[in-house]
Length: 292
Figure 1: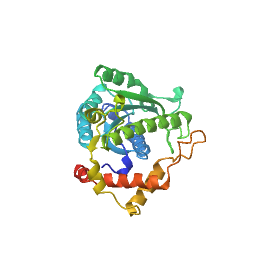
Figure 2: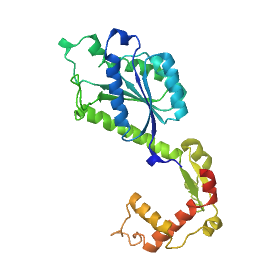
Figure 3: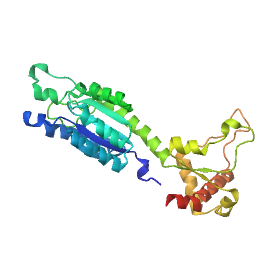
Figure 4: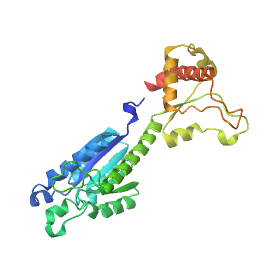
């Protein structure tokens, strides 16, 4: 069973062009500092596998292999400056995960009268995003783009702060994409118990276990009633009380309906029974075997 609060595993890499580093002193460490900030921000809500700054095609192959070994569930490409699409495509092809392109400019606006080529390169994230997007489309690779402002707490070059509206919006969008990946990750690592059957004749409710496994990646464990009954814990067992507390944290327990006399809040006896069944299901040997 997946731990660490079901955090999604995200592969992060930045891009730049190796030919720039000798021409523009300080550009590479500046971009690397930006990427470290992206790493820290992502680390607040996901598990990050950082492949560093990719500035050549061979490094792209190595980064892709790193992500493949790490089984990342989302690839985040921080577009630091211009880079060729050949430095990005091999990473995605090897890792085989959805892609999020971060088109986040450090400065909210350039002072063109004082902007030389080096400063422009530190802020030209958007210039190669169309090229990379085109390569993805032609390669039939799913991707999304988040555009906005990076947002730095202590900028040295006049970068926009974290509370800049375009930074807040961009990071909220990034968080939402990671949350979506987390949901998919939880489904892939879930084990769903199937007990009994639906009401006879309700054909639309029948489950196709093959499709569950094929499309969601979940494991379906079929348990017989007699197996479950043998493992039913006592009413006051500690694990039953723990399951009740967990249930109340996860679900909002409804009260009696003012309109429907049949829709009533679950009685303590009903809640206790449901939690006993849940504990019996978790302790079944099939599940223990599957987890091992």
